[in-house]
Structure formats: C-alpha cells, structure tokens
Length: 80
Image (tube, rainbow, N blue to C red; front, side, top):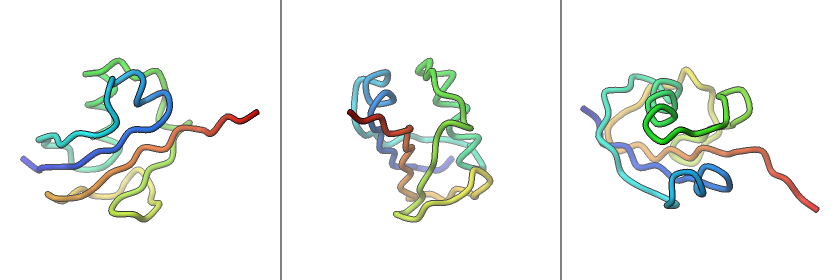
C-alpha cells in the first residue's frame, strides 16, 4: 500500500466535501487512483475532462504512483 496525499479543487472538492486528504491505496497509476476515488466518492467527472499533477508537475494518467506522492486533480476552469 502507498500513502498518497491528494488535493481537490472546484467540483471535486464539493463532491468530496473536503479540499485534501491522505489515502492508503494499492493503485499503480494516477488513473487507477482516480478510478478508485471516483467509485468511492461518486465523482461526476470522467478522466478525459481532468488534468492531473504529481508532485507539482502536470503529467499524464499513466504516471506511476509512489508512496509519499502529492496528487492534484484539476477540473476544467469555468469563469464569468
């Protein structure tokens, strides 16, 4: 199991009810992690509508996770 620190923004923060958390996961990639969280918290956004950053760097969904990583899921920005 890996310990992963996660930050949520916008609609994901609203759906999760918090802006960050640390989880224990067996997820191998950030895509696996998001799939796990999406099932657990009923996130409405599909992977293809999000961007993801690991340890402060934008990355792709196939990026491998390591214990201690910081993951940020970035929903689309709406403005007005």
